Structure formats: C-alpha cells, structure tokens
Length: 345
Image 1 (cartoon, rainbow, N blue to C red):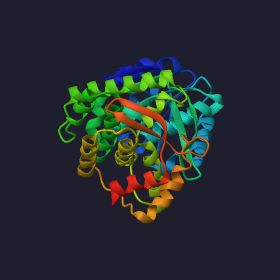
Image 2 (image 1 turned 135 degrees about the vertical axis):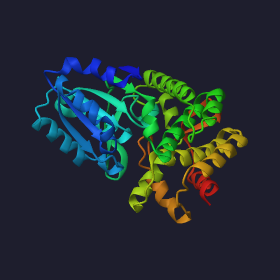
Image 3 (image 1 turned 120 degrees about the vertical axis):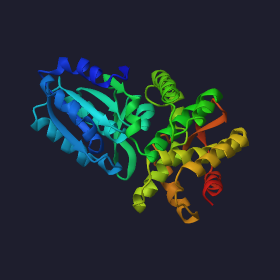
Image 4 (image 1 turned 30 degrees about the vertical axis):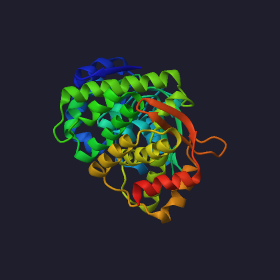
C-alpha cells in the first residue's frame, strides 16, 4: 500500500493507466460528485467505465447496498483485474473497500478520502465492512487498498461539523501517543485552519495508525489503542440509529473518549485535569447527545455486542497518562453507568 499526498489529478492519472483494458469503476459519495465530475470526465479515456453514486449515510453500509454494488460491477463487465476507486468519507471507503475485497474474491482498489475523518482514520489500516443486524461494522474483512490519495485541499469543502468529526479522531491520536501531539492538535482552529500545521498532524496521525496496524494487523492487542473512545461511541451510534437521531461517528467518539477517560481515572488514576480539559472542550464544540438514565440499560446492551469483547466481557482501551494506554481493560456495569452519569447527567 502506498500513500500519496497532494497533486490529486496527477496521482490519479499515474495509477489508472495500467487498468485501462480491464476497466476502472468509481464508487463516489453523491455529495462530492460535483467536485470530482470534471476529473472523472477527463479520465474517461483512461478506462473509467462506470460511476456508482451512493448517498453516504450510515444506513448505506448495508448488505443490500453491497449487493447492489456487486450487481453493478457484474453488469458493467468488471473482472478480477479491474480497479475500484472509492471517493468519499469513511462510509464510502468502508463499503467500497468491502465490495472490492469480496467481488470475485478480491480486486484492486484505491481510496481517495474527502473528509478529515477518512484521511486520518477510516481509509487507512485495512478495515472494511458493513453494518448488520443493527450493529456497526459487524461484517467485514481486513484488506488494504493499493493506494490512498490524500489532498488536504478537500478539507476546504467540508462543513464545520464534518471537520469536527475528523478532529475528534485527531484528538484520540494525541491522547494515545504523546502530549506534544495532543497540544498541537488542541491548537488547531477549525474555523481558520493552518493548512501547514494540519497537514503535518495528518501525516503524524497516519504514521501512528500504520505502525499499530503493522504490529497488530488483526486488532487483538496494541492496535486496540485506536479503539479508545469507541466502545461507548459505537453504543451511542446504535442507540441513535434505533431512535432515529442524527449522530455522526466523530461526535460519538468525542463523547465516548470523555466516558473512557472517566474510567481511566477510576482504574489507572489518569490525570483528572486532562479529563476535565477534554470534557470542557467536547461540551463546547460537539452537540450533546440526548442521553438520560432511562437509556443506560440499552447502551449497556449494545456494548455487550461489541466486536472487541471476549467471553461476554466488555473491553475498553483506557489510559494511565497521555501516551500510556492499556488495551482489553474491563469495567463493571456500575462503573460504566457512573461514567455515563458523569458525562451526561
């Protein structure tokens, strides 16, 4: 897998040539289609045969949408030597990567992440998947794209909420790695982005994820540091889906990290001042999730289905300090409810 930065059009042209005869098939988030239409049309002569636009909402990461994509590829004449180009955020790269990995037992694919979240997290690390039976990423495979093309100029097209989504994952990298990275991440002003600083932090975050994915490919030990905040977050997302409440992944992760820092204080005496700092920041910059005592049992039930669990035990990644993480940690039901009370009541 190669990661190429900036010069998006030149990098695309460089890659697609070898697939001309077997065809290039573009899976694109409909919200960014207008941004890419000129690029796509200019590359028609290089072998782009067909474009599939998806409405990139969480419900699109489904077996029904995967079946539609498999049928589209088959009908359009794709084969095992074809190339799939996924353009969009994490929903698009998750779904498109899964379809590419399973169509005819796998064909090459490229990810072009268009959101900050996808640049630092979703499009990197080899995880692809769909939601199933009300559970997030319940079905999927580990497989890497041949290339990832990152152009930070695309961030300029994002609304504030989408920038905040990716920023939550960037805060996660700072918390699990080192205080200097965390300090620099807190310094980013999403209303007036310093592109040079942001680009350098994106590269650093990607290096951290690549390192953890390399030493723990299948997410059983050290790589689970990347799941910090996600045990609560996935339960919040499932609850929101059940209630038909709009909740983005990044916002769920932001609140999930506060909950898991609270557990970190209980288990590892994580510095309370850092917990309070993150909690204050999240309350200021992220929409509150409407959670009350009556929701705790349902949240806990969703946690019991988390993929990271072992022998019916809910697993967390907790922190002893900035950059000192512990994976596969256990917490009692009472402690989990206590964390929810601290954050939401």
